[in-house]
Length: 488
Ligand code: ADP
Ligand code: GLC
Image 1 (cartoon, helix red, strand yellow):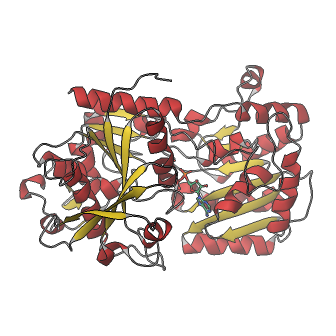
Image 2 (cartoon, protein in one colour):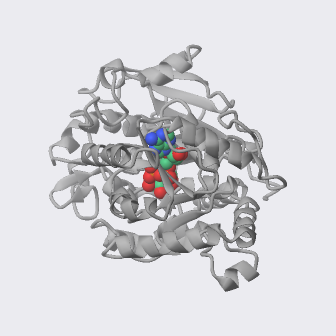
């Protein structure tokens, strides 16, 4: 751990933050990383849109400024307060854009909000205002840290602003880019000269993410393997050329997890706590999970768990494909997630067909996700690509070895089980190559064989539980990048 961090001020702009508003891992990272940075002495402030969930959870917010950032934009109030963990927070209060039902990016029916360019254009614009000489506030950041496409126009605005702080563009998922028609740049007040190959233009449209990748002082992504993968045609979503050309300014930093929130020894969502010294509590959680999900209460049958957004990325379709073979082993399966309507339907149908052996809950349920990490024996994560992934880290910490596709952050966080890695005391899960039913099935069989060998199974569980997934090292790596940008 770095003992001494030079005084630095960081503005951390994000579109979601746990526990206030969460659709995925970005929310976890946006909560945990600023807290870890603060713990290291960095003066960090988080900037977030004023969604109803945020305003409701934090009634003490105070107005500190009224901003008129562009003629077309509604007047925006900037509110100030603190997150539940004490990290200072600014909220962009613009009811016309943020105060509505549904989710942060989509309405109740899963359709993207039609004004997302304005909603996140405004968030980006305010980020840049606060990071430049235009800011009405006395607190000025040394570095602006942007996350994903929703804040990715900020580096472009900063580039064209006076007295601007350098920026970091953190990529959590290259698949989401924020692409809008070309005229959007005028609505958002970007200079016309930015609309070019060496700028925000992407195949004739405006790409928020490309703007960030082009104009930011440094690019980070959430695992070293993903940093390499996104420079290739297969995984670069059209941005591989730009990313490769900027590779000297591109760093993969593995996410950590919040080891306070995710601690089987003190997790209020479990019916019995446990730790590496005594894993007996896991069985009580398994029985509780089986009860909650309508499964037969069988302690000796391996129980597979999956918690995920139901999208093509996460490979649920392949799990559904092998499910009939899996239940015939016998084994049980628990699925928790939301997303694609067809996948939700297919998962529900599967649990009807195999009632007592497969349980599906369609919805977002934080408590249940913890119980699955604890109560399942084996965790499934066959993602087609995975920038980092958090669930495989949670599951190792909960003594639930994961079966993962060897991609991105899954490569960097799971040690495949074989004789050699077991002997070294490092094996912590099962990795397979190629997302298809045959390779997943082979890995599942390897896991079930190991599960029935009590001694190696215990070793596998303990190896995973002993791993350090805390934020310390990664937060220090971000500090190094901030310091480098400040020196430039
Ligand atoms: P991604 O961000 O791509 O969705 P991650 O693995 O990084 O993937 O993070 C997903 C986060 O969202 C984890 O904290 C996971 O537990 C949580 N999560 C996903 N779906 C659900 C759900 N249906 N209910 C509860 N938590 C969920
Ligand atoms: C994204 C990625 C996921 C990553 C998360 C947090 O949603 O899909 O792999 O863990 O962001 O960085």
